[in-house]
Image (cartoon, rainbow, N blue to C red):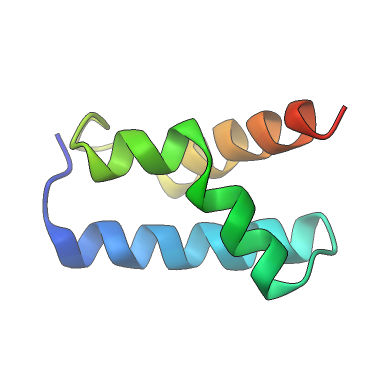
Length: 70
């Protein structure tokens, strides 16, 4: 599982930038979307398996955020 705090922070930062650009959101809106996501909670809780790629996380997060907006 991914448990290194620095790695988790980097992933969350990258995911926030990804969501902001992909969905044309402000940084604050992207931070809110990421913070409330299942992906972020699983990362923070050490429930994401080691070896999970950024692409996998970003795809999962994008699906989650776009489904929440509908």
